[in-house]
Length: 343
Image 1 (cartoon, rainbow, N blue to C red):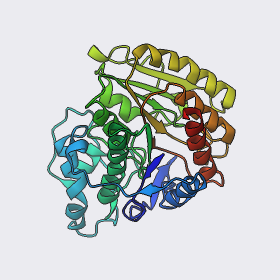
Image 2: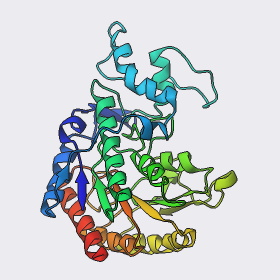
Image 3: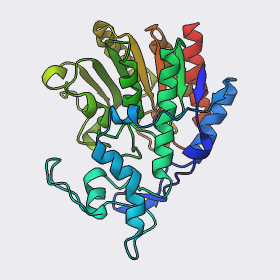
Image 4: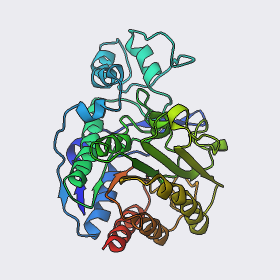
């Protein structure tokens, strides 16, 4: 399996903090995640390929021009503000997306960033752009004939809407990969197994019937992202029936997770996709710092085997999974399980 990562560029983004229950704490989406995940890649003997620079075209197929201009220019503009903080955190938000678009960098931060988990620093845009390049390179490898490829995307992406960052995410790598796969596949499915609901991915495709979105995650009634990820959210317009959320009770382990995924895959098979994008969150692990679900390391291998059984061209895109001793082991278990089942 080809693996794509640019550790130097992706590792430059190093956010200082995020707001938890009104208290600023160290941001868990650190460059060290790359080290741990690359150790998992090395354990499987995979060769790491540098992603190509695919330009803005694949990214702009998902994200709005105003949002991309904001991400690529706001740090320089922010830095000209007297006594501004070294990172951009939003402090004012519109009440709805249809509000007037402001000229101020401060106000644009509030328009385009939904929470206090994804500050923008000097290297955020560059890291996010190369994270997206990993997703595009992996998707292109599969389009070119590889059966599977893994994009080690960091920062992650599934909480990012077309023009709204959130949850450590700036560009929606899974959506970018899925859109690219649509070049030759009439129907593509995104299967999100992250601890948290893939709300940005859902929002991007919510009114479309060519990309089926399935997310299995901790129940958001009292868990991030709170406002999205409920079972009644099934799509709108042309997309009605093409979004499936499977919220699980907090603490659910292997048996409950696999049962929910098995039920969801029935609908995926009925959709008859030509290709799969797996939004691979490893934070459903029983020892992950977020502590929402209780999937074991062997459980990730079983999840991978279930997904590999669909027997379709597959792009695996890294989402969450935070610093714990087993992070690399969990990735190794998943990739090995997927490859073994695909052999």
